[in-house]
Image (cartoon, rainbow, N blue to C red; front, side, top):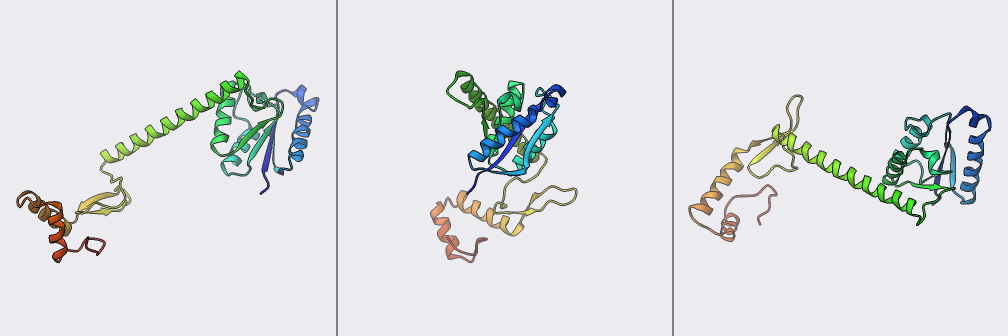
Length: 219
């Protein structure tokens, strides 16, 4: 299966534009992709002209990140990290985002190596990823807790003795007592507490009687 590539180039000043720096970047990037025998669509050539690397709100970079979300390519090729972003924190953010989406990033003039600076970058990426996972887990936990406090049922299948009422316009999904099943639950409690039957004895009595579980099969 052919690897799909995207390339990103950036120049930040009109002087750089006039010197055709963006074209020279694109030429180098395109040549490297061709040498690797990667597939490069014209739609996946992204260039920000006159865009500061100290900002993340760049049209071409935004388009590249949106396309990465759609899994439009497998690898992004950039001349050097400072073309991707000037600020170290932004480099880490973008690299981690693309990595999470399964997209490799290749820097032609500054490949990731065993250099301490490169290893620091990788460590920061890992720390950022761990932080994001922790934040998402906490948001998920608090969201579930808030919905539970609001009376919403968060499980899947309703427990025996209850029926699940689906969410309606102004009413969240919730449980109501199923009177037929609730009567059976009360009977089981009586057998367990008052008659002091074991679980095995209760199962035997159920199987010998007329009671049928939801599945329609005896245990």
